[in-house]
Length: 107
Image 1 (cartoon, rainbow, N blue to C red):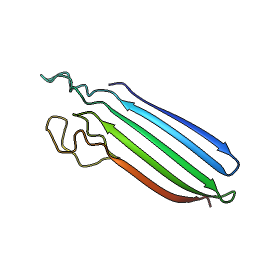
Image 2 (cartoon, rainbow, N blue to C red):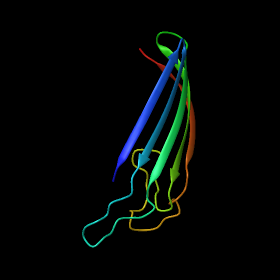
Image 3 (spheres, helix red, strand yellow):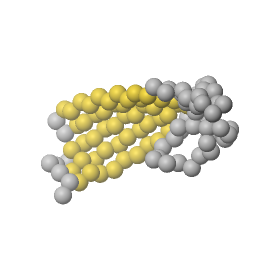
């Protein structure tokens, strides 16, 4: 599987903007009688805007979307509860979208 992720950031005064794009290659299940899983690639794009209120405080907003092929089930989170790649589930092929915002304050 070939995966890659690219991030770019631009800062202008108190404004910070960032874009990121990543791709996940097809699942490689070769071995033990299995073949590779077709249509299992995924792509993700995210945009972030931050506004610096002070030297230690920033407000931010972020939007992201994952585009899954028919057999891919990439989602948000470190270890989501999903079936293995061997069994079909309703989340395959879904395209989750997320929005968030927050404040970062450094002590």
